[in-house]
Length: 297
Image (cartoon, rainbow, N blue to C red; front, side, top):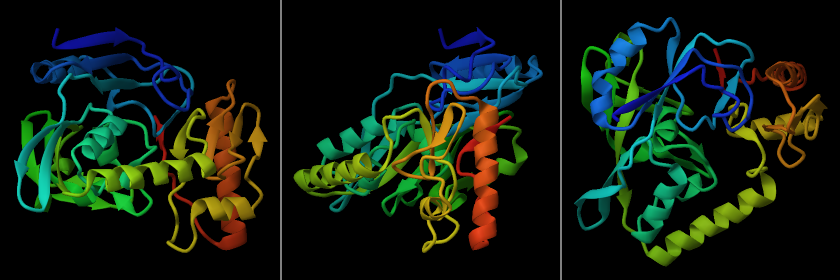
């Protein structure tokens, strides 16, 4: 089948923070052919379209949610489509897991993305929020995206039609579409020594394991850094939020900018902790912390 439809999918089951109620429907696209039927399916659903990816950057509210979840589940592997003396262009499905893409680049001696080690989710999800870490942002390497919008179908957008900012991504024509789906991404990556790429990746992974709760039920960093010299984690730590808990939710004892679910947390507890933390940082340092995680709906 080109797509699958599920009734009342649980956000708790498909997000890394393990919170949330039920959407109206869930549509999983398994091939490009499934895109043909998607607009008609969504037109018959009162819920707002929302592309879920692997749910690694989402805080979903409880209850019945007026959402139509869209997921991608294709079997395509990354492919080298172009090469010159210094770089290689890799085409990869938006549904492909980001950690597996990093394995692919290390095996082929391609650098640039090492800083993204330890970030879960899909390639499409990484692009949609311009995922970054350790000085790396995936947007700096995008050569082209293939994006689906209702009414226009699949379109290729070149680098000069794409705008990547800090944890933000947009493309020309996006404002005219009720929703869009990143379908495929082309990344231009520099050639490098395979062993050196692996060593850099291993070093970054070790640092993250020592300082971040990468195995916990979290949605990654909750807040954006308000300034280069004022990382959100440091501000939260100085305000006493490292290890601060409310019910089943807690700011990680390892890194104050990670909110984790201890197993029985709720969205209400998470949102209350976020609210209290924002107020404390504003009062003590004057910074208005902006969410990096997406709160839905």
